[in-house]
Length: 183
Image 1: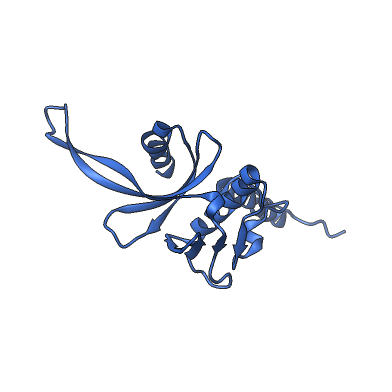
Image 2: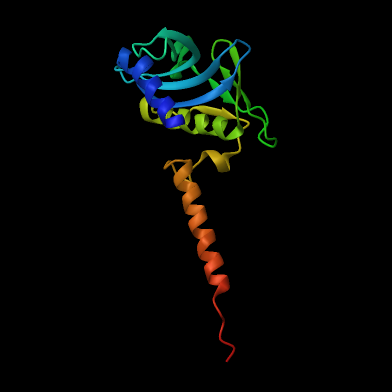
């Protein structure tokens, strides 16, 4: 589902302006509708962070059996340049808290739908900051074991890492079921 949403949002909102959607997470906001925090790359190779509002709107159908259909409408409500982000503050690395703070000229509080989404965004912003601005983004109050790639965790994506962990676990189960010769 998220890959379809990503493709549609990229096509409708970002590619139409010559940008490429790099990453997005769903966030919780006070206003009605679904909200996303998106990271995109402009044609000038600048990284941008945007809050996007997704609304369902009715539209006329060409199909005679259905008079109306629903379609998603996307609107950017806030946009910042990654280079203007001074600090990404995870608030408390020791608790399972999906809230974080983005320090620009002012501080913007964000509540992700999960801690996994919060860390996914942090890894993406850190990577893009190194790639496009040649500096490391200042992260505060994050658990570095989930941010920095090690031999097992890398920038290959959460699904690949999960598949690798499952493969290792399956191998351990198979080995534990093998009979051991006693002589």
